[in-house]
Image (cartoon, rainbow, N blue to C red; front, top):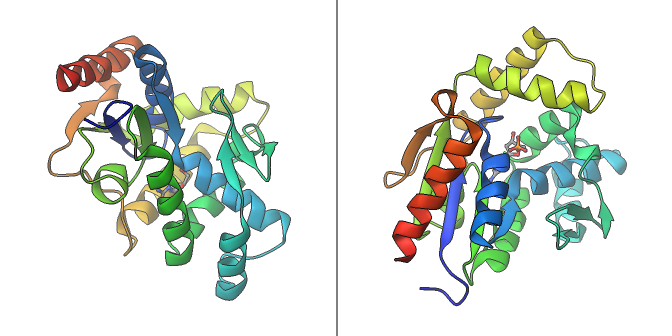
Length: 222
Ligand code: DC
């Protein structure tokens, strides 16, 4: 065992419910939650603020050296110390994050930060490559799946309630496009680890999916 408990890796495609499940499971276990997608999004916001395009390799390298990304005690994502939790939710930042996440210099910076934050255990990390690359030795690995349509419907509700105007069709197309890029990229693609437990969230209520993770975690700790 690690000093603070086990490492729980929750991977899966866009809008599969990873972050909400990870956040609630972490709360029930009194663990820390690390939303790694939010880190890529915060970096995308940073690049956007500096007007740097994802094809400008050398400037992206410079930015990834300088970017200061962190979480506060409530799990909100901080960029240069500023809470950007809301700003990173918009679809343009999600697309840019997916593009930037294909770049080796960006991934190595993010992965190093995630390993540093999680190494003592007592953490739930959610992302695409947690069980395969960031913590291949995580004690519990869960891979969440759901159809693109189910995922688009869920994400639409979130976006509409936060004031973003987008149709279900456009959102489904964007999700399919992001899935394709995230799964086909050369570096750390979205992939289920061979020892991960697959959970189809379209067939479970939110409470059921959180409980499954908590039960599995307790099984590992005992
Ligand atoms: O989970 P999300 O939609 O907030 O993630 C935003 C983008 O970041 C996603 O399109 C792919 C990328 N990402 C990644 O490559 N690796 C991770 N561990 C987390 C996210």
